[in-house]
Each structure stands twice: as C-alpha cells, then as structure tokens.
Amino acid sequence: MKKILTGVLLGVCLLLTGCERNIFTLPVHENPEALVRFNTPVQYDYNPAHYPVTIENYNTQGEPEQMTYTKPPERVVAVWQNSIETLLALGVGDRIIAGNGVPDKKFFRKEYQEQYSKIPYTGLQLLDLETTMMLKPDLIVGWHSTFAPKVIRPTEFWHKRGVNTFIARSSMISNTGRTLQNEYKDILDLGKIFDKNERAEQIVSEMQQEVNFAISRTADYPKRPRALVIEFMGKEVSVYGERSLAGDIVHELHGELLAAKDRNIGIEQVVELDPDVIFVVVIESHYGHEQDMVDRVTQHKALKNLRCVKEGRVLPLPLYAIYSSGVRTYDGIKIIANGLYPDLYKEK
Image (cartoon, rainbow, N blue to C red; front, top):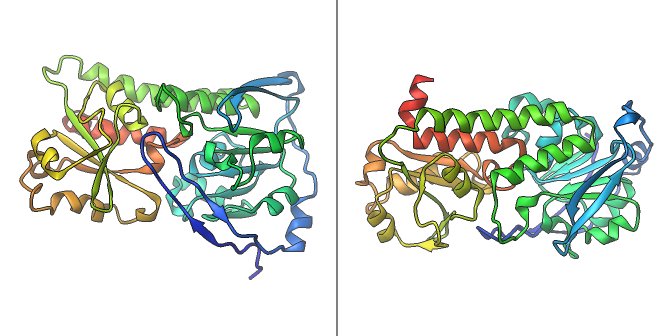
C-alpha cells in the first residue's frame, strides 16, 4: 500500500459560540510519485460565458475582499467537512486534490462517500505549507482559522501567489452571529464560482422548504417548544446561544431558545429551566458515540427525572450539522425540527 502522507496532529482547540478550532501540523513526508501525478494540470469543460465571476469573501483580518474567477477552479484544497461535502454535493469533487479535517468517510452522506474516497489526500490531519504549495492549488476553501499564520498562512500569502481563498462566513467571529443565511450564502457563492448555480439553488431550496414545512404546520400551536442546546466540555455544560447556528435554527423554527445569552450553565440551572427538548452537541472526537453523550443527560442522577428525559426528547446533534455546516445544514434543520415538533414528523 502506497504511503501518500504521514502527519502529526498536535492540537485541536474548540471553543463555542464565537471561537474556532486551531490546527498545527508537523511537516509531512513527500511522496514524489504522488506529487508529480497531482501537479499535472487537468482541464475541465466549462461555459466561458459564465465568467468572469466576482465573489465577495473575507481575508484573514475579517475584512471583505472581492475575488474574481475567470474560469472554474481546477485544483482545490478543501479543509473541514463543510468545505469538502458542499463541493461534493455541487458535483465538483473531481476538482478536490486534498480534503482534510474529517475523521472518517462514514461521517459523509452515503451518496458522497465514494467521491470522497477518490480525493488524493484525505484524513483528519491538515497538510503542511510545503505540501500544500507543491500541490499548486488555485483555490483553498476552509474556515477562518485555516488561514491563521501558524496553520497554512494568511489569505494575503496565497493571493500574492495567485491562489484564491474562500472562508466559511460562520467560522468568523462577528456581531451578527452564525445564521442560516450565512450557510445559504456560502453554498450559493460556491455555486457561482464553479458555475453550478442550479445545483446550489436546489440545495438551499431544500433547506428552506424544510423550515417552511415546520413553521407552516405549527403556526397554530398554542405554545412555543422550549429548547436547550448544550455540549459537555469536561465537567462544564456549555451552551449554544443566540449567536450560534443551532440557536438561529431554533429561532427560525419558532422555538424558544433557553439560556440564549449564556456561555456555560450548571446542572442545577438545567433542572430549573426544565426544557421541552435538550440537544446534546457531539463533536468530531465523539462521532460514533452519540448515545454515550445522550446518556450523560439521561443517566445523570440530577437530570434523569426531567420531563424531556422521560419523554425521550434528548437528542444528539452532530457538530457538522450546526457549525459552519454547509450542505449538512439540512441535517441540523431536520434534527432540531424533529426535536421541537416530534408529533409533526410522525405524520410526515
């Protein structure tokens, strides 16, 4: 079996509602054969009439920047699940030369797993700067933290070398918070970049239809369901509040978000809030162990008598569905809608 890359993941730090992950990698070993193969230019058919296309995105400083594409990108480095899976959903997976930040392909939708397997470089570890440059990308898609000086360098570094960058809006710290509109905008912009407007609009429309279905069918409900979105950080209970994407989805679905302005709460406060439903966020390191995370609520001696526990309304919520989630935002909408309105979805 050919050795393509080896790497060491030094650290991952996740801070909620306004913070990001920071990845630091040691240099990877070269595989000359692979590097020669994937540094050979590949031509794709496209509609010249669609170009040039100018997209407003952001630089490392969080400032808006205009980037112009005279043709669709052909060699893309995509970092984190939202970047990779959204490009796969748009039908441009064959342009991805490296897709990193995902523990295993099983966390992708089944229809995209085979495409993901064909990407030359994959895995949780990020490529180091030298290898990224040797692959000669014409576009790097990632989070704001991807373009930190100690990761793969600021956006300015790449722009000077003729490489466009695309930062997921919700990965940035902003006063507006993380919203469904940000996710829609990212998908539509990537659709424009690759001349896949119709597919991008279809993806966004499916999400909007799911939101509209829930709110239209529950408009006459006498009471708004009360939801608490939490993540266990050691012994701490962290809250996804009003500036989180999960919080925005609850709001858009006409639910009441509890502890909306808090960052952390105690077990006693969870009991006092007595939510109708609790969503337990599951991060990458716990993917595949969702029930263990749910059990931290349902088996807790102080929480097991909560009404939502007795009614079976403690649900796992994977991070990929509610943090810079791209195409998987649909999953976040469905999970939260099901939790808020379980009777409605029994009928569907």
